[in-house]
Image (tube, rainbow, N blue to C red; front, side, top):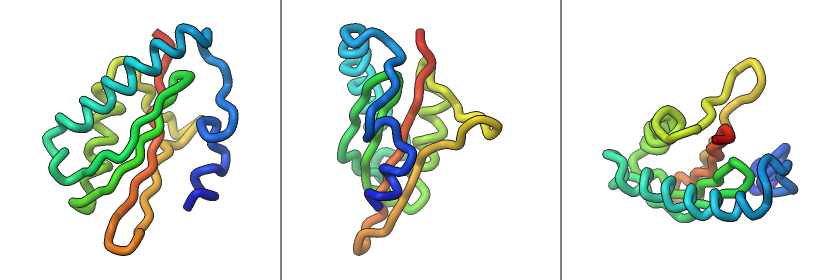
Length: 118
């Protein structure tokens, strides 16, 4: 699974600098909090256990457990359409990064949410 996550993943390797490093520190802190609150307060949050949110350079990584089967995809689509400056992936240029794998009885989710500069 980690190999699949690493493949072509700028967040894990070296993300392209899309904003000033100091501005990015502030943005990353604020967006980590905002995305965490969005997921935890989502109407389907009872069926999703958030394990980690990490943001940098207009991109956030999310790691969690999908307890309800298809809960994560609902939360993910809502995040892409409701969070300010969230960038909905265009099928022409990029595809969404959301992977799920089975670990024992747990559906583990890894996803990225990308943002446009404000």
